[in-house]
Image (cartoon, rainbow over all chains, first blue to last red; front, top):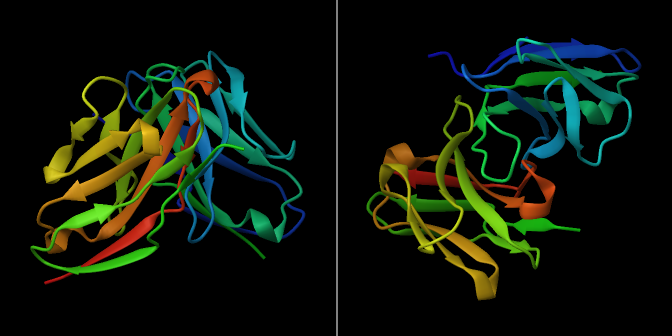
Amino acid sequence: DAGVTQSPTHLIKTRGQQVTLRCSPKSGHDTVSWYQQALGQGPQFIFQYYEEEERQRGNFPDRFSGHQFPNYSSELNVNALLLGDSALYLCASSDQTGVFSEQYFGPGTRLTVT
Amino acid sequence: AQSVSQHNHHVILSEAASLELGCNYSYGGTVNLFWYVQYPGQHLQLLLKYFSGDPLVKGIKGFEAEFIKSKFSFNLRKPSVQWSDTAEYFCAVNLYNQGGKLIFGQGTELSVKP
């Protein structure tokens, strides 16, 4: 049973560029959440997708956007990259959106902005 | 704003020592509580969770945590640590009125000396 997978593993971008990160949820899961983990910090919630719609959003600017596809996979897009966007981006999946959902995390994509 | 505090940033123990990692949250409503662990080179994994019922919950690998509502705390304990427990530990809170959004603490790095 495949867990949560993310691609790419590492990415280096230049300030001002745009980036797309991808996530495939664990088999049987229909809800995907994205988190940003800066070095030495805990993960911070970006947003959550369910039924191809953004259901919840954390305190992130509109430069951060996402998409969920009919097969439940998801993309995170970041426009106009800033140096401060350098972080590990984690995808988590669950089989429901609510408070009793147990989230399973992927290995993350390490984004470096130069 | 809601927050989660982990008071110990780095804990160093010898094998067989007892472990207690502190976690406090600032939110007056109903919460679900989690401890996640990240072993070196691996992704975040759920250690244990509290939704309701007995405030003393047991997780994997001999870990347990106690929810003390009056103290807004959810401390993680293990009677005797092993070298293989070396990892980063994250406390997380899920607020009843915010669906699946997890709020993480900044993490505690545990180093166990053989």
